[in-house]
Image (cartoon, rainbow, N blue to C red):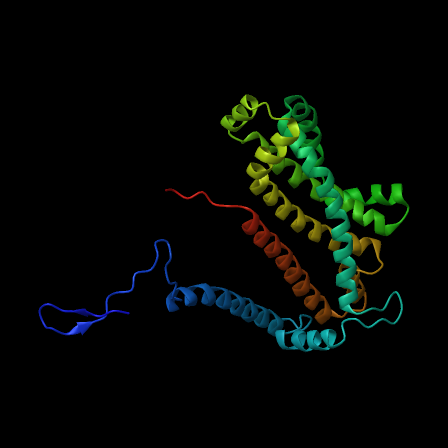
Length: 287
């Protein structure tokens, strides 16, 4: 690097390094990191403190230390199997995730195309809106007996319950996204005489994707919530059944461990979809 002579002092100094336009060095800010990490830690500490206070005044509630010891023992061997009714917590979590994947996948396969159709057609929107408004508020567990009646088995009934409860957010958000596509886009498509397939793939899908992913995020949360409740009633292998079985055994520490596990799995599923949404969408920036 060439040096520059200062005209006043005669000293040689190095010229300032100029970074290319748009390229900036990001130096971690200690205060920003502290503000990002400290509030969640304080919130968790407050929760544990309240938990400890409740446990100190109620002997039937295990303390955080007792629950931690139970969790360590549970996850020391989470995939043991001593028969269909005595399996580790790992197998129960996987069984629940499998049901959620099937029910949620079927809901996405039906709900997203249906949302596109409702958003594109006023006639279909007018036809389906009353049905959606009528069925969407129905409690998830109200659908379980219908599934048991139709499928004559607990596992498909649970998958059916997930399907019918997680389909509505995807239908509604996708339809709203289609309806909010700027009319200028559709005018351009009409001028270019694009086919319906190209309109959907080249114009509607990129514009609707953020709305669609919002519906998917809401649906996965509903699906995970529903499966826990459904498994408590249907039995078999699953985290919901495992919680109910531990209650029958009066093993409260295991119930508290399961509550934390259910929350963590739900958080991981939601954050995975948030990461997916950030990866496939873009933000408009001013020039």
